[in-house]
Length: 149
Image (cartoon, rainbow, N blue to C red; front, side):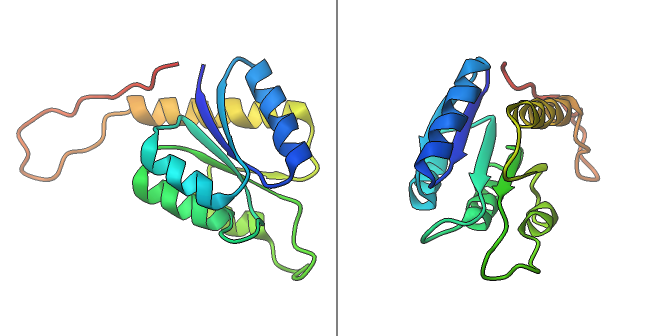
């Protein structure tokens, strides 16, 4: 069971994501706006963050950047249906360049969501169990860190 933060301002989609993800056995914190999610990132550790790209106020890129700063090992999935204002802008490509481990183009299937979650959590666990190199001159051995399921 993973502890997952969902950031989605569309009420129906947020509720549906909550049902799908808790139904898969995960613990979910649902935030309807980026400001609330940014506060949660300061208070709690998450195994995965799933954020919408476009929201009023702060956006998914703000959530992604703050997650990278506060918890660099926490994987982030970014969702987007694109931008009506800037149709040639590819927000998901931008999210990948900024460190998102995965992206979901809206609309997506439940199966795509759940496989993206599994892949992101699997990547995080593999990264956590891989010893990190120590700075030159360090005499200590590296120890691996494992995420709890």
